[in-house]
Image (cartoon, rainbow, N blue to C red; front, side, top):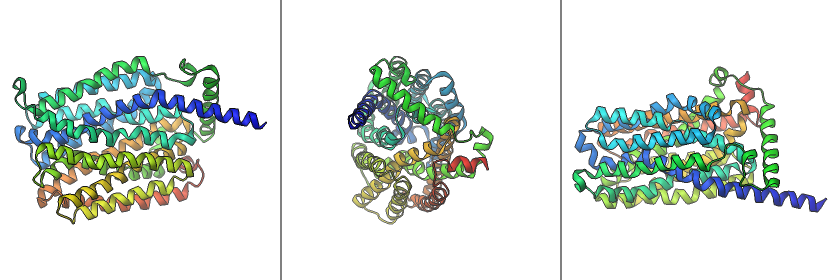
Length: 440
């Protein structure tokens, strides 16, 4: 009997390890380019804003249009992924967003930039929640926070890698008669198209089709994931209209908005904030990468700790408190080194939040509601965090002339998010709490 239990545990570990090494590195590279392509506007702004006549308010509006389109198209995109399969749909997303991102080099003024940023958001909509949903087909729930955290390390890694690379690309100014920011968009957009093509041949839709697992691993994983899906299906299926009338789902979206806003605002505005201390473009790129390097390491450790302890509530709340503390203190200091330290604290919170939160969210939603629920939570959080708060930052910067003072609204958002999270998690002591709330 002991031998049987040991053999089963060994099979589990070998299978999860095999799945992780097969899927995660590729998905991380794909997500890394997603964030490079959506966030490289922050570094491009160091040249582009003057070339096409953008004020801080106009730049904030251009940045927000991505998230408005993302909000509109995210739920339909995730439902299409369920309908057509992850392999085809993720490839479609990547090929279209890569082409559109590269075409940003063609913009001539504010209106053409507004248009391109909107259709870029429409093209990329559904990628992140689609991958999270895809991982629920492959990764048992006990491993999900660390796997999601590992996947999402691509977010800070994108800025860590792209900041100095983008700064170097800006130095290509004049090559071939093009500005440096033109080269930045073209060179960083086209690799995504190639990754989209690879997606068609590399990904597998379901465990039962995985020829790269041996028969025992395939049978164990199929059985395990079917059992977990059945357990989630035991919760009442919630119609879409009822799901999105649930205070619980909207509460989760508002909680996620804080981390989304912190990451997005800094991704778009941090290069200009740092350059305001008198740095050159190359220095800005290098310094801008430091907070993301620190956050990349700590978010993985935090996700593992959440899985090891089985605790989600405080592993989600503490990062939100770090965001508020970092933003509040950063608005009050006026020298470079302390600002970089505090921005690092904000990004540690923004990215460490993600693994425990999404593991908690996938456990709260019934199987039939997961695709729409995950996409809805992510879409609303991106609309508020990106669509609204990127604009708010630009408005405050225009009104005060201070990049640091524009961080203050995030402090209030952090405190509100912690309060909502603690209230929701108290009402959801059992995994089915969210669905019960929705049904009522």
